[in-house]
Length: 512
Ligand code: C2O
Ligand code: CU
Ligand code: CU
Image (cartoon, rainbow, N blue to C red; front, side, top):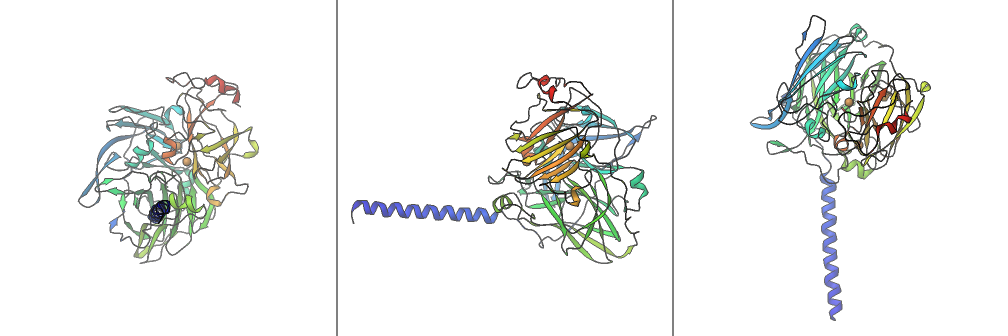
């Protein structure tokens, strides 16, 4: 055989071998990227219910809570302690509860050994009490937040928000619920005994490397670090005995990257009664419900005596094959098993009407702003603590158009407000997006329009955040800042911010 022919043959077989290996490797990656625990979880652990945080009431009526951020360890699996962080405990935090009109104070003490912060997600409050990256709580330090609860009953939550480190702090276990009540919510015949027929359901996905959490991200996963097992309220493989016909689940997606599509194993219908910022006008029957990171939903499920059913999460309804596979969209999980007692206390039927919903009106929008969402930043800019991106006038309503730049699935969260989702892809939003919302999914390539009203305090110098709530994206810079100013006032300057990239006064002309 001539030399060059032999050479060609050798090169040919090497190429064939390499492509077989690559193909095989890719096939392995593709197959192993899909996770399913549906039908295989044994539900051996009773669901933990976070305790209600104790509080004291001062003479002036202020309700005072104490939260201590601490490190510890948690045996999610018997005999295998995992290093974790928590509030007033080793993992997660107590449920704070307050009533509309009440003055609250939360004293936050940080014993973590590194700087963090505590943000009240969904709460309407002054920017300096927001707990975002501009309110850091240093190692060993204390920060006190005070505000008056001035919004409808809702299922809110709290979590750290240190600049660039939010994902890490939440993954280690720093998260808790903040429930608000009002005269409407307590006057309705809804399941409302905390921990009995009204259960917090804090959903997180985790994976372990030996005893420790594994927070690594698979290099093809656009969304961030995905887990392979589910924790509810910090319990692996959880079940809960229930003793009432109707059970209300306050579901919080406290995962950093995973999007869930919840439903029951037997496809039973459930009633959606509330979204991020409060109750809906009337209950809506659904059998599937999507929640992206940061979103909440209150659902009510009907149980029959002695039966068992499993809350599951299944594949995304839409999405392209590649994006779905590597961002968790093909995955299925058993989440929580409900075990009905042999005899159940009768529950009153759900009220047909829950009440009027306070939502901004898009027709009152005084101007429109556009936000292009990409992993590389919002409107082409990465988060800069010293730059004010948007200036809005106190009392105004605006139309915010979000456009996904097409690189990954995102969502969008705005601090301080509860907005109305006006349009999704040019159409009326689905029922789960029609209530008060602070976080909204923005699928790949999609356009979503919001009506946002800024009716709180003004502060020209201290911004609130808006950002993607896939925390890896947020930490990489998918976040911007807005200040609320009095009519005709200009933006100030973020205290302590290096003058540089953009002079804040430059943004002032955009105010309206
Ligand atoms: Cu739940 Cu800016 O965060
Ligand atoms: Cu928030
Ligand atoms: Cu994102």
